[in-house]
Amino acid sequence: MKRQKRDRFERAHTQGFKAGLHGRSKDNCPYQTQDDFRSHWLGGWRDAMEARNTGLFR
Image (cartoon, rainbow, N blue to C red; front, side, top):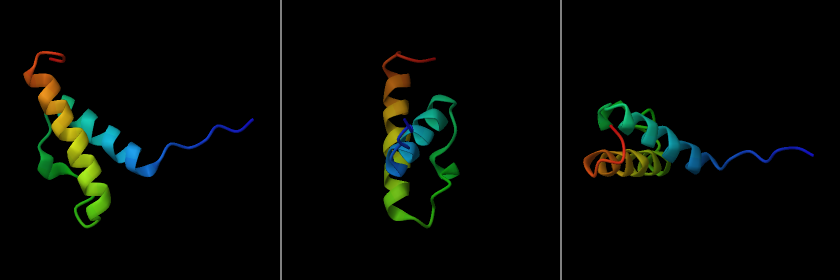
């Protein structure tokens, strides 16, 4: 049985979350020209920043 690929928006969110956890700037978003993907990436980045600020990750 084939594995289903993850949604591309979910992947963008996950990449943004990982970037945020590593302390990267939101200006490093690879989706500068693609608004839909950029908003998901930034959403993940913001979630990571919030998690870092609440002490869930260091």
